[in-house]
Length: 276
Image 1 (cartoon, rainbow, N blue to C red):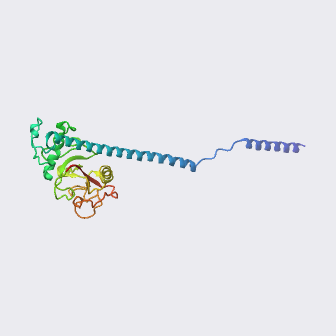
Image 2 (cartoon, rainbow, N blue to C red):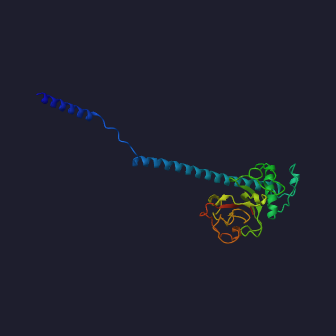
């Protein structure tokens, strides 16, 4: 009898233990990673962020190009108005000292921004000084008389980031230009040459977009020209155009070259025709 009661007690105890275990929740399963859905959501968010960054960069570049085009148009208008008012080209006048107090030198008034590569550095710098004195454009300091170096934002306008703007007349040895053309050239002066050599500073994509919006999209023809410039620049050999031969790319025939989009590190020097 006692044995029977003991067995019943053990059976009831076992039952209660089993019931207690069944009622006790299992410990939570540890999660060792992300599900595919979670990973997909993260990738979508990253993609949206990158897209917004790239779009913002493109919008900034487009705004820079629109501002540069507008500024070049303003400059061209100011030069034409200056010529009509003073019967001479700013920077080229032989009677500048009689128009504005403090001006101590005159130029040769031959109708060009310089008659040679040396003279254009002088007259191309005085161009902005004279325009500012006339009130037809922003005011800039007179360029350094020692080497006529041009510092963007100080002696010349900064039409594009890190570029100087200089008035130049190209001579016959530059095959694309002819002998009677006045241009505004954009580039960055090379400090190793005393600030007298204008070198490339505009990437080929920007140059192409400006050329396409304002002209024919070809770097070696039309009213807008682009090239890698002289071998005295640190950017040689040419990286602005698809020219692969020896020598400088600006010496090649008109219309023979294209912009070099396959050279992302390449830079251009640009020339904008003001008037023939």
